[in-house]
Amino acid sequence: MDTLAGRSIRWELTRLGWAASDLAARRKSHPAKLKLAARLRTETTLTLKAIARLVHPGTSKSANLRLHAWLAKPAASAPTPGPPQ
Image 1 (tube, rainbow, N blue to C red):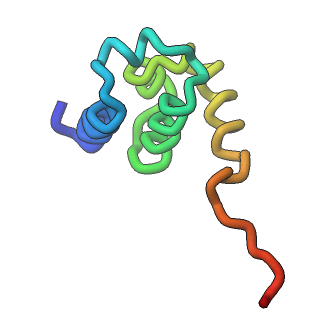
Image 2: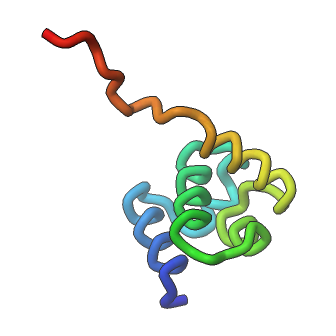
């Protein structure tokens, strides 16, 4: 699979030190899996069914709920602006 989705998945698996079988073995709501699914959803034209087959975040219906919740929550690592000093 030499598509953008395939390259993204391979890069993320390498970064995490996971094998492809780890995607199926990890829990459906694992933050790394949701981050990868969100990236695929925003950067590619893959359907939710295709993302669910590749990343294993559950069925396409449950993946849709998890993905929308993941994308809607504010980024925890984003710095919050403080008062000027």
